[in-house]
Amino acid sequence: MHLTEEHQAIILDHYRAPHNKGLREPYDAESRHFNPMCGDDITLRVSLEADADPAVIHDVSYDVQGCSVSQASVSVMTDLVIGRSVQEAEELHTEFASLLRDPLPDSLPWPPHLADAVAFRDVSRHPARIKCALLCWVALRKALTAG
Image 1: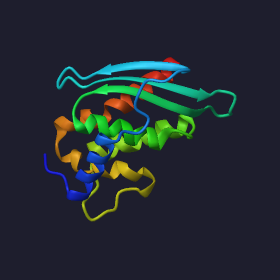
Image 2: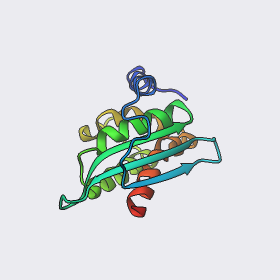
Image 3: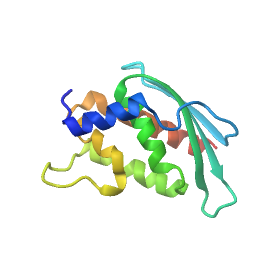
Image 4: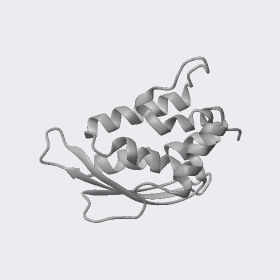
């Protein structure tokens, strides 16, 4: 898989020094998601500020086994969703998945509110890796709908 130097650096930074890694308590919901095609496996926990209206994601912690793309993606995802409402997190998931499946032309900039998720722009050119980048987002959605 070919990544620009900038994107590769972001992925490696999140892979080597992941944000919010390690399962923490207390939590309100937990989910596990496994990709049998490549073996990536994640357990994700979500803590909500339920008394907020709407509910806000207070914390996301996880344990992940898999490639650098899946490990970096969950680190980036936690940065994006902690402190946001459940609805905002869902909207980010939808937008990110859409950008991976139907990429923007290179001439158009990546949405700045997706921050380090720009590193996965090149992943859209490698369909087998899209599932790696989305693994954590699917786990988050499962946790939020189960919890």
